[in-house]
Image (cartoon, rainbow, N blue to C red; front, top):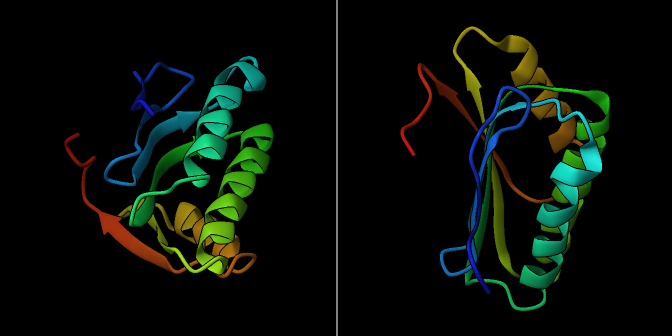
Length: 130
């Protein structure tokens, strides 16, 4: 299975999912013009990954903004990570938010309430170098 990497644009985030390390990063704005074109390859990749996951799976979300269609896809992805957790795999979500972005922190908290996978919240002062 290959790494999936997408370079950030004005409407889509940087994406880097590594099957060997189990580290999956989504960073930036998620407002794609056509949601399916952005999300379908990511979700298909995760389906394949979940059949033989790494020893530990970490989904890191460092999102500045997302639209309604993307919120549904984020929630879907969180449920898939949750499925791994509930099957006994070591899985977690790290929700990163800007130090002045209480709204995004609250959104992360809301998402954390609908899944059982462990959530960690990280306040960041600037975007973490990739």
